[in-house]
Length: 487
Ligand code: SF4
Image 1 (cartoon, helix red, strand yellow):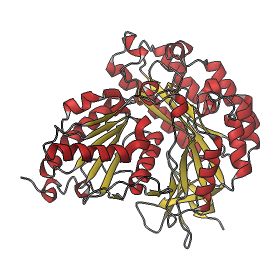
Image 2 (tube, helix red, strand yellow):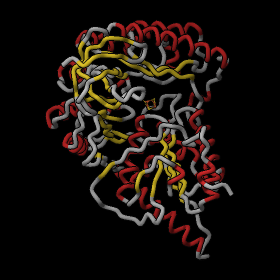
Image 3 (tube, rainbow, N blue to C red):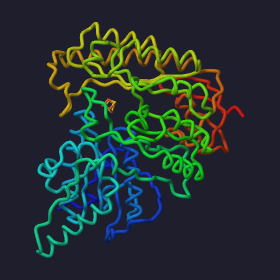
């Protein structure tokens, strides 16, 4: 039988990719379960920032339950894959990882393998049927019950080993009632001084964009009580966090579904008034819910950074209608132009889908013209991926895959061109840069972000992660900047 050390090859030091999210967090003690003799946990996170934050919550809960982190799945007693199902490709990656976990399980039957996140919710029991060695499958609504679910896995094993009953696999999917959902508080450990943090303000989504699986795998929209958000940010600031990104699927509708709570614009104001946070961002927004009060916040809130991620998805009104986006190109441009007028230094980023069913050359051309008109500082673009449960799968897709691929290439070439021009225009400016990390290619060089969310590399002896320092931009690449410390 292969040993753990022989399973890992030189070419594949970490079998699930090289970017495992493994943040360590602490929280107020509440639940304790015996993690057993093997008490190290490895989490791999697929997908978006929401998933990263979910993983951070799970790590909080695991730490509370006595687990230690490991970045090596070969060293773990618990391997947890936190999944994404926004595109079909992500699901295939999960299946491939699960196949690769099989030898680990064969070698160590005590290993617990769990799948969390959107694919868990999408596939439910089918995942355990396909991969019978999967001990635990749970959807995003069940994260806060992770310690109890792991106890159940152990209890089922005990029953199986002692012949009491056949051990059952543990499965928790489905959604909690809106009023019963509770958010998990995540704070970094005292000894850590992270530069920035994510804070959940909302879960789920009540929009039914025709291409999107999120409402089916993350459930109804629930806003977190605003006092919890303020308390979490105050806790983060006390530990040295300078910048917070508020997270939700559609933050602009924050509070509107909870009667009696404040609106999103009011929440932004409260963060400025009731915390000592230096820099505030949020994602993601839906253009249909961007109102004047949010534009006012960009114009007046002293800690809200002048960078707005506003997905437009398509520049064609016909496609926007098929996507059920509930806004037109004109309405989108109205928001952009109003913001440019009120906040001249603002920058935009966006999400775009190409090759949506029935998209013509003319529809695509309108996407390109909108990109030029706005002048995005960055964009995330993808070929349409049909997802289960969504209504777009019923639209006959007459756009050949080759055409979709070509359009994506054209769009990404244009994006690169625009981003490069935008970055060149930054040269000579002095920006307040939050130092986030050491540059991977040189240990003397720091990596940080400008208020416009642009990555800058620069040398600043004696300066460290978490500090905000003035940096003069000296050189531009299409997707990053270089600068010099300007003290
Ligand atoms: S707003 Fe639309 S695209 Fe965004 S999560 Fe909700 S359904 Fe998906």
